[in-house]
Every structure is written in structure tokens, then in C-alpha cells.
Amino acid sequence: MPRSVRWTAYCGCRFHLEIDNETGAEKFLLADIICGSHKYLASTKHRENHSELSKHPLDILEEAKVSNLKQVDDLISNETRPSILRDLVKCREIVVRINNENTEEWNEMVTQPHAFDDHIHPIVLQEHRARNG
Image (cartoon, rainbow, N blue to C red; front, side, top):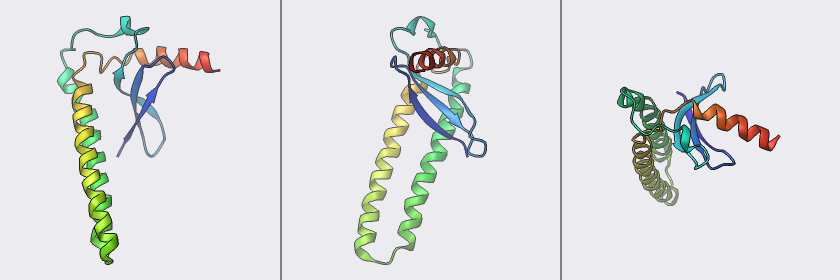
């Protein structure tokens, strides 16, 4: 299962990258925020295949949500002490809330016309590296 990481450049642009768990290779997944300096590079209209492109990041999110919930459910099912079980049930409620918040956030992100502007990421990355050595 691939995972995603959020990266924010010095300028304020924010991207999500997909990380291959086996190789550690990173690739562009989603453009979240495009700063004022790079706004001129951003799409202002959705691509024809925007809905199709949206499916992959949302699938990664769904896999992460299932994994998050499974972890806490496994702990709950194996716990015998009532006090720890009580805390784990509270933890599960938090995981469900955060999963729901993440769904809302990612659904927002994929609706942006610039969400799949993969041409912006290498430009920002190069500038970021040049600035930070």
C-alpha cells in the first residue's frame, strides 16, 4: 500500500507525494496549495479527466483510513483490562473523527483545478533546493 506525505515549500506551496513503501520512491500525487508566486502556473479550469485523476489519491486515503481503524480495532479486540479498553475506545472515536476530517479535506483538495498540475512541483522543488542549499 503506498502512502502519502505532505510537503510544504518555503514559498507556501503545498504538495502531497506518493511514497512507495518498498522502494521509498516519491512521485507527485496532488497539488494542495499554490502560493501567489506560482499562481501563474496553476490551471484555472479542470482537466477533461479530472474526475478520473481524483480517484487515485482518494483511493490512497481510503486505504490509510482502513489501516488506521484496523490498528485501533486490533488493539481493542486484544485488550482485557477495562481501564485500557476504555481509553482505546476513546482513541477509536478520535481516529474516526480524524478519518472523517481527512475525507473532507481531501475531497476539497481534489476539486481544485490545480490539483493535478504536476508540472508545478519540480519547479517549486528546484527553487526550494536552490534557496536552502
